Image (cartoon, rainbow, N blue to C red; front, side, top):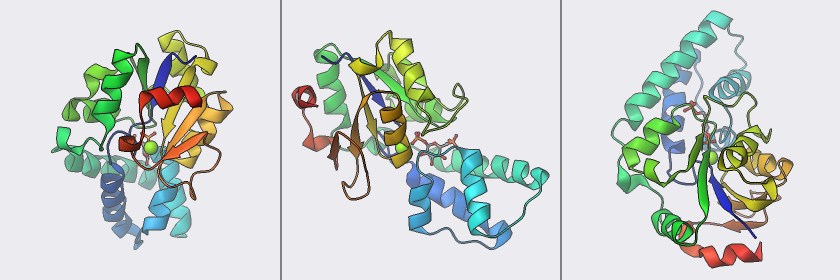
Length: 214
Ligand code: G16
Ligand code: MG
């Protein structure tokens, strides 16, 4: 029934949201803004450029394009420093066992992430070798909730959308998968994630055989 699984990166395979949060908080000092946990939730799955626009809006700060460009660069430099030490221990619980089961059962595996730093994170955590295709922020032109990232993943794997299952922690990503005509498993809280075909709080709760029930 299903041939492929497409994984979001941040919040699904690893928890880099904490590093994005730290990096944005440090950047916010330039315009006296302290990002809250709730606001950080809203940045999940959203591109770097859109994240800065949202933050500046929350801060009621009118920035020039020159300031924005500088701050985007600065945020990423801080983020790169924070993820420099990442290692396989930061892979979220149950992920490796789930990937093992998928490979054993012949599923194809792709990454569908908004991050331009996805490859660095996959290298640092040793996850790279699991993927048949990697679609990241460097190759997508329209960010989630547009389905482009997942449609490109399906295409790279040679699968139809109907044969793909997406794993996502962000509402924008769930909406993207649905817009692409795919099944979607939300990773997080069922009260926050709307419209997923199933929601798990961690991969330790899910067996590959259960995917057939989607
Ligand atoms: C991730 C994060 C977002 C982040 C985006 C861009 O997406 O969830 O918070 O803003 O990537 O990241 P970067 O600044 O590294 O290009 P995903 O789709 O992997 O959850
Ligand atoms: Mg995510």
